[in-house]
Amino acid sequence: MEEIKVYPDSILRKKAKDIERIDDRIIQLLDKMVDIMYKHNGIGLAAEQIGTLDKLVVIDLRTNGNNRLIELINPIIIASEGTYEEHEEGCLSVPGYYDVIKDRKKWIKVKYLDRNEEEKIIETEDFLSVVIQHEIDHLNGRLFIDHLSPTQKLVFKKEWKKLQREREESK
Ligand SMILES: [Zn+2]
Image 1 (tube, rainbow, N blue to C red):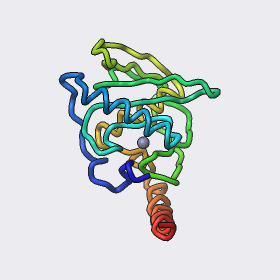
Image 2: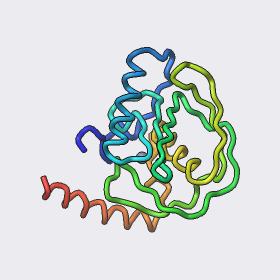
Image 3: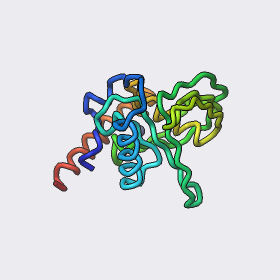
Image 4: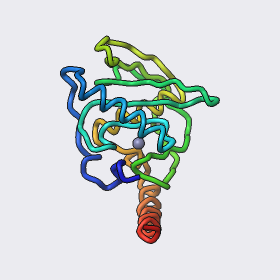
């Protein structure tokens, strides 16, 4: 997992920068992110997770084994509604830890650019909406563990120490 930045790496707390021009570097970066996401069996990845502050997100839920790759450049949530039901989230940057999140929006409308520099709008609800919110959080230096209640955060701290110890021991 070395190519993926793991909590508490400081880059995960930074704000990504808008992409001004979609050049070769950006295209190569997108391709690399897609490869890394699939390699680690993730369903989403933000550029910060591989150490660059570009406003890029890739997502593929692979529902029923079918690929549907979504690439978001400079994504921004322009409208949202409702609250998604309690559900568990995890993150490649917080490996091994999963917890219940209660405050995601149900429906969102997101503006972004595709790799051909065309402005697009995606309106989506339920699980895909939640994954997009999780990834856009990354671009704002936020992690899913920031959404935990104070009690959940205490559990996380304890669990995370254990997970870190286990990772050290298995090296
Ligand atoms: Zn994540």
